[in-house]
Amino acid sequence: MAAPNAAGVAALIVSQFGRPHMSPDAVEKILEQSATPLACPSPPTVTYDVPPGILASNTATCQGSAKSNGFYGSGLADALRAVSAK
Image 1 (cartoon, rainbow, N blue to C red):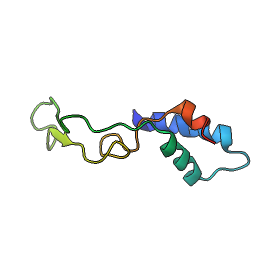
Image 2 (image 1 turned 30 degrees about the vertical axis):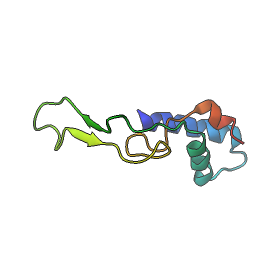
Image 3 (image 1 turned 180 degrees about the horizontal axis):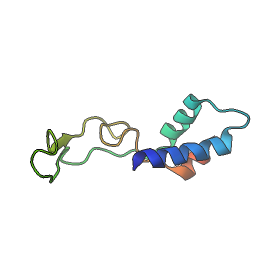
């Protein structure tokens, strides 16, 4: 569900600041700068409870910092902060 949330916040950014035009890079910059950082879980390795054979591996390990990591990317999209950014 991260992609629909990020797309919705990106649309709000463009509706707020995109007149007459806003580049995708500018939207991305605001989206990333306004995101709430999320650190890796502790412990960083998560085991998924799935039947054998469904996944190649039932574990995943988060790597990176709170600012950017393999589980949460640049963090949690924050719509209010994004449209208040400029």
